[in-house]
Length: 149
Length: 66
Image 1 (tube, rainbow over the protein chains, first blue to last red):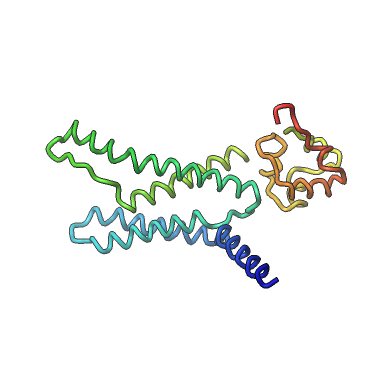
Image 2 (image 1 turned 60 degrees about the vertical axis):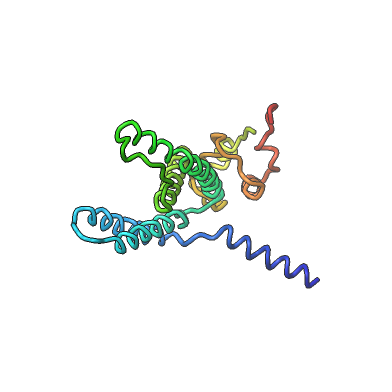
């Protein structure tokens, strides 16, 4: 009996974790964080100076903004939307893995052709990978929703 | 799977929006079901059955390739 209770509570906790989403109003907050941090990130390119730490913080804030947008509920979060989310997540995951595997090779090949003296094989950074994954997810999710509207 | 949701909705004189509101989904979900782009869950099918006052298999039918 006790074991059943423990299993039930574990099940409920897992269900809550797997299905966790922020309320809809967080979407606006996410967009705000994303746009502001992205604009400042672009601005750092136009000013001279050592902005390594600021850039790193801004990149992280951009990712946080994107993540908030991704995990915020739609106005009507029904089973169709959940289904489309699942499809968008699995598609972006597969495309993300392909991107991580292929993009460094393309970069290297491009350097070999156009700038062979500075050609070196480099893996992608964490920001680039996560940014790509989240953007692909959002674009896929929107296009699936538009197809279903 | 094919369905006659549009017909059942017309019998009750409901718009997609009204039916969506009754079963707690968006209008897009009703539209996707009617155009066979989305197969609803058992829960949603049973809610529709309650609204139409008919068994589920009267408005959802299996096709030969299902």
